[in-house]
Length: 305
Image 1: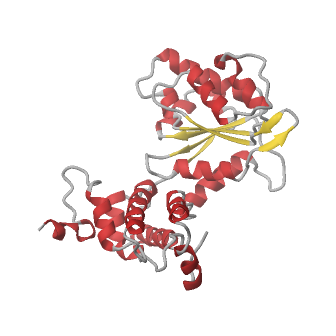
Image 2: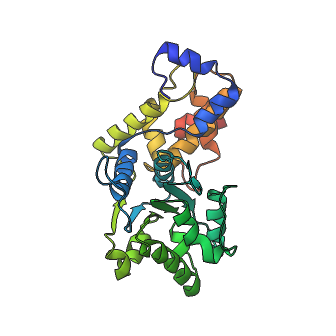
């Protein structure tokens, strides 16, 4: 939703506060990096407009924490919503996030929760055995594995890493599903060290933070304007007036920007404010300043006097 006229903003400001909170929490903001990430997933999944899914290949969407990978992946999955099929619910694009301490059994349990359907009957109950079978029964074309570094790195034992590699390979070897590994840059090195993955048409997109160059700051300002047009307030919050503060705090990473805007938005809702004010930004950033960072974000130091 975009609220870029006085009339649209007036309507948004009169929505129930719970609805306005939901809008702020789940903002989807197209911008340079976001669009590039979505385009990469689309090329991996369905490279020809109106054509068939590209099955049995593997790709990577990579970047540092806060680059927007999760939001982009979730947004793409939302384009292909679950549908009722002959054997139960079908998930053309299935999104699952890995976690620290992941094992093949825990991953199987995540698949079970993500694809829960009262109409589906599984031939086996052991998650280790049926996780691949589950993906096939759900008629999944693209499996998105977020935080993939937890599957292969982060001090995992060689046994667990081998289990995770075996699962991904089992899925790809069906030649009925493609896999997108979403995670930190080291995932690229892991894949290129495995010929069986590289041979499956592996390609990756690295999402850089928006830089502090003039061109980067211009894109960053456009991003802040785009966020502002989607905030459910009666008046614009003019976030782009604080380009330097937002960029310094976030290092150009969209995740950190959105965390700050979300907190400031909630403060504005509680104050029944017509928009996000600078004092809301000051309070939101106050508890998010890294040790040793003495930058005066949004002029908050004046409030300490």
